[in-house]
Image 1 (tube, one colour):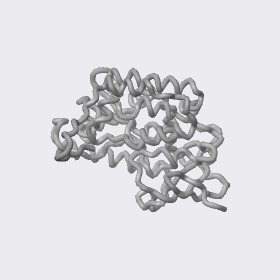
Image 2 (cartoon, one colour):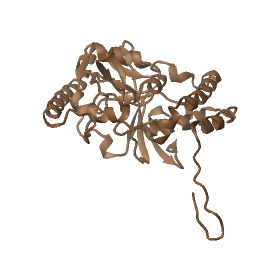
Image 3 (cartoon, helix red, strand yellow):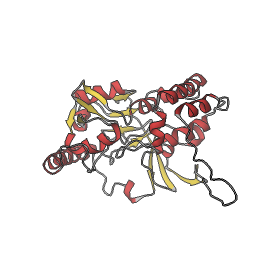
Image 4 (tube, one colour):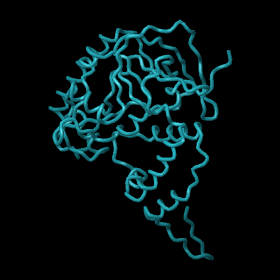
Length: 311
């Protein structure tokens, strides 16, 4: 905050360099790490994910060599602490929870089989790409926006693991979230023989796109150019074809942190993709998993934290 006064000289606008910021980071103590601190930090990172605009000032600052080196110290401390061990683990088979927020936009008006949902999604994606090819300019710098996510259709069942008393990860880590105040949490019985594709980093996402490509260059080029600076041809997984081989796709938290928002090479020098719109530890079910027999729970948000309703 700056101020001007007749009795005092004007204050000089501070202009710290990346090296100044790096020195402050290097002097920050890291002995106060605990699971709650890491959850708050992870939540902040997810809240700030944006795939429809250029990187903001904090993004640019964090990407400078000096600050990246200092942040590597923070990352090494987190990794050594053992507190983030679940970030790199595959789907938690014994506890999968579905979260539905009290928001009309989050609900499916009519329950449909996964196969029908996927078929309708693919028809819509192909139609959107053809329309964008006809109507939108090829210049990626043009002021156009549209569909920017690369997830399966959101009407499918989505689950995350439980974090002890915090409840499901899906309550806390949501990209492009709204100010929801209440949610319903249901357990999902994971079929014992389910085939789950694990996205644990860029290579796994690249392989999924390479095996089941669906081109979306015309419909994604403007948004993904702004967020990544790349003007490649773009693909996403064709979820109809993925469903022919896998029952679900799970993005680990580490996979999210190392992949989301970056251009991932699918065919080197020619075709890329972006993991966009996913949430950490999220599993999309491409089939219809049976609901658990346990009763659902109601949760509410109080002072920016989620709590289960009293029984």
